[in-house]
Length: 241
Length: 209
Image (cartoon, rainbow over all chains, first blue to last red; front, side):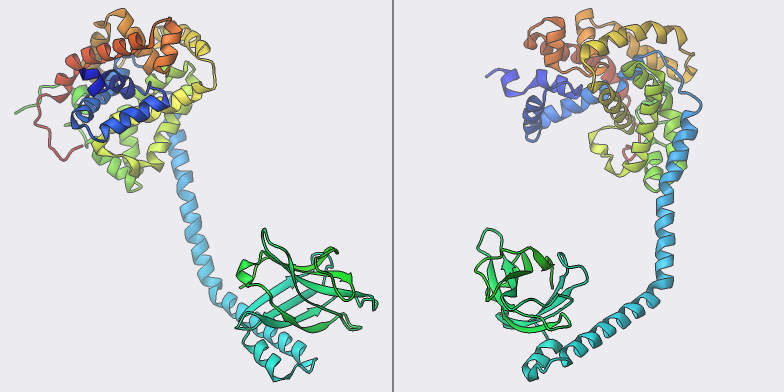
């Protein structure tokens, strides 16, 4: 076996100049990973290559170059200062913000409880509302202003749906809840009607695990319901906890 | 034992007795101290601008390369690996890659034409260099001049024009193997002349890059 075949010496020289095509460079790098002698030779080549600019006739850099570099360096420092200021600002507003968030959660909970008490749901629903396994917020994609909350029991198989802001439908039409899964048939969780105020409180089934569900939708369908959604989404949720 | 190397070579070898070592300046940069960057600029700014101008052939572009090189040094000083070469070589490598990147979008024939035109311009406008760098420059220039013309040609095409060996073979109408052999022979000659000067004597402190 020749030395060149054993050690890629020609390629090593070209590699030190950055003059190899990518596949050849990878071949050299694989060899360098196991060959100390070539690693030493490469370092010497690279050091020699690094001195090549000294062989050029010197040209002085323009006088404005260093001030421009310094200005850029100082500008790069500012984001750090900005972050520090932001942090200090956040510390000032942190407790008011946390207090406001806590108040919002309290108010939201009261509203939810009031919503629940407008119906006679019974002890099972009250318990579910106080401690749902999962809570899904649906927002009005096709009906601005409409909203819904899906309270899924800890067992993950049933729950209750509170809806507001949907229009009352004629008797031959109904609203239907859908669980949409990627690559699998969409399944329904039940159908329901809303009252004259546009509100509904319905017991629903959760036929598939929420974690396998990509989106939850409510559509308007022919009564008593269909096997697949045909209407446009009126309420939808794409994320839940 | 006193260091008998030329001053510029000592600086290149990161053993500059008149100021902090390059690696110490780089450590200052790593700590966010601008004076470290300023020290490296004072030491290598001219060389980097010279290199960039030789590659890109335009003073404005060369200035851009110079600035990018030192800003990259500032931003990425932590990525410097002493095992892979000296600080000066690292800076030259950044500058060369940046300059060649600027040329990459253009056909290499156009690059060569521009650089041929530049040679005369630069020779006519170069200010004189500092006395301290004169000896080292002479050593390297002499080593390059000592190369047979075909070997010098492949080195210049690879280093300053950023051409791959395949592109050089195409440019010169030579077999790829011939180009690679010439490249290796040229680097071997340069190594034979320059490496002993760079590395001897070896009394530089080991912890200084």
